[in-house]
Image (tube, rainbow, N blue to C red):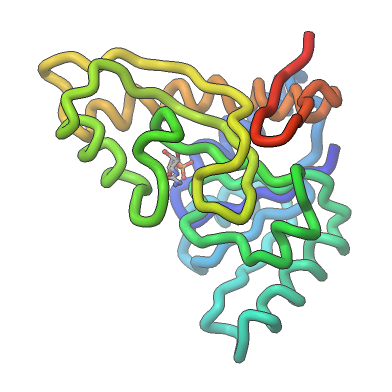
Length: 205
Ligand code: GAR
């Protein structure tokens, strides 16, 4: 399975996916790393591994159509079969969502459908979770559709929240399980075990 990774920042989920591939746990190939930020650390990880990189930012194009065209070109040139968002802080353009329907996944640092949507990313998520008084949080792998953080849920795992947790401590606990479940979810895709029925997705045995 050829994977295109989309990342905007540090790239620890990208690294976890590469480690799972290296360890033989995930049968896949990352053919391209796409970032909207030229200074993303994820780009350095890709360069070190000699993985093709592509910096695609709206600022570089006169219109959204032009950005979409460039993105679709990169994806088809690199024969991407699954688009994997790993800390990608931009919305995937509608035309790309439609072209890769049910073939775009994202990881979110909370238990969707709660604590998702516009503005809910990075530390904002953990601040909102702590402020809510919830006793559990977690990570969610879900398919990307037209609605922000609303596509069918593929996999989730929880962590407990204790009184001493700060947003930073919770973020670290959640990140640890993100690194566990993202490769597992991708393995299910690679093995053709993800079944999608309407708003629901299931991993078959
Ligand atoms: C991760 O915690 C990921 O769940 C979150 O950004 C972080 C990226 O870390 N994504 C979102 O908030 C998307 N809404 P990484 O760059 O080290 O993988």
